[in-house]
Image (spheres, rainbow, N blue to C red):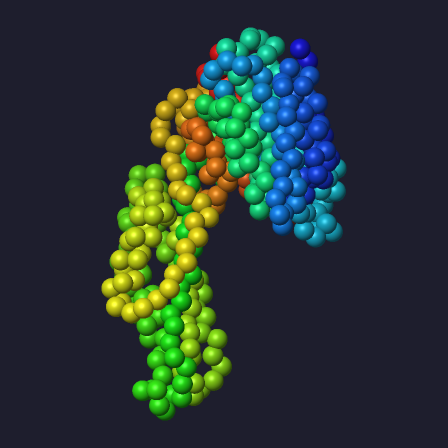
Length: 380
Ligand SMILES: [Zn+2]
């Protein structure tokens, strides 16, 4: 069976300018490579009202258990000011040992490392378990027609993933620094207090909503939500907007609004957090309305065979012990965690989303070695 060179495949993927959402060419190229390795490939296009149709790829090799899944995305963020790049962002040039281009770090080279690792495994042995790839064209965009819908599709087919490794760039400066094992959640609160508009000189004929709003906001942040724990920083509530929409000096306004966002750790469920914030707001003793929106739940993948395999693989290949971290924004791991344990490990992210995005070609080789080592621990 042909070995796949992760550098050449990274270059080929970067040369398809798949600014989010991916139009599908990059996924076709990937599917060609995976079909040659014996994978069963499903190209899945999802859409719904008001969104662009998005192509995704689910590829599986074998039918045995466990089903180990590599997950990622082929879409990339826009290049920004093309003139600021020192290279063509879609030429995939190699200079001084670095591969340049949009998606080099986030995260086409990691996808190439997935495929190269599988090709090397198949040359040496036949896996007992299955290997799959879940690749979306919609991670950098609204993420409505991507990973979430592929997981629904899998569930409808009665198919499941047992372990998942997301190849997002998790290392801040050099390979082996960090594995992500969870993320904080995000809750938005939209608060409204009604009053009665009137003349400031006749307050008995009006009702001012502003002191009530201020009293509620003061209660919200009166004491810390929690102190964090071994794996998570503390939850924090930030008031991000107060809107009274009143330019006048002598009018009591009719309404006062505020918005806040909470990044919450695994000490809270979204419901538990809403209950705690409601308890605090009620202490102000005034009437209000609130709308909630949870844009991501917090999660933690507990120490187990998956995190052990990734940590040991990093130690074996590059003799470093990565930190287990829950920092950073959200990723598609927030959807996958509902199906199976998920951790994230990829390249160095120092230049992701930036001008002159690049990674060391030696790091791509190292990542492919680490992925191969993980596969040997979990599917052989
Ligand atoms: Zn990414």
